[in-house]
Image (cartoon, rainbow, N blue to C red; front, top):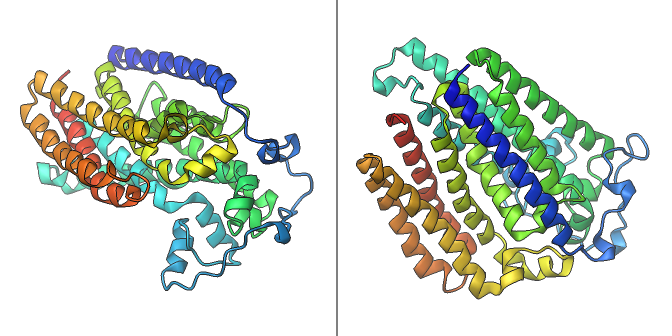
Length: 395
């Protein structure tokens, strides 16, 4: 077996134990949602009371949304974003539940992991066409695992456990509207989960990994996804733990998956720490999304950071975690001799700071989407820059 990889897996196991302890402790300190919004025991179980029965909806108690007439409403429906058209096509509804728009960061994370492995055969680096096509196919399959399967599982189970709240806030969503039955939703959750875990094990076999690292990471990520959405822990109710779990799921886990698949030996404690720290930047990005729903979160007992600290303090916590993390990573790359990568990363950080000062900090509630659209490309290319530096450096 590989000593460096064993050390890294022990580091991951220790991190998982610590995170689990924090989650349990946090659950006992998180205020419960109001009685009317809590899930009953019957609704919280993944066992439907009757086969094939659609979710009951009392239309008179719902704030129904009008049928969207945008020419892009069909595309929005398939991507799982707001403003989508209604449809009776069950397969379109199934796709909507997986929210394809959220697959992109995970796919990008796998690409970063492949770059960090130092073993991805790119045709622009002089690799043969056969070697490149083989590695390209491997990357696509790994991205399918991280995106449609496991992210699809995460989004579907999140919608399942949010169905009571969605019945109030977004009654036209597939589950509360009754467009898809309980049994169909539960079947989708299990198919995506078991399919993802099965494919993860197959990737370990394909890579020849003696330690089934991709499978273990997939199990861990699936568990985090479950406790993020499901009671009693429901990490999303907490600002710190929930947002960090979200950031780690979108940055660290797909990176580790891609790197362990392409070159398990290259995964080491330094890479684990760097990516874990980078997840703090993901925490900051997650906080940005919380500003637009302060009133609703407060009413439902969801302790987002803007609710806990107020807008003024939370906006500085947000930009502080995003900037300090990236500047720290750039400083580390410079300290180990990867000066060029550090300078490129610094060049990608500065536009983010400028956009924070000019757009986000003046009004985080009104400008959250505008800031995200302008700043996130610099952040994700910064992650790729860090991955390329890891692939280039010998730790």
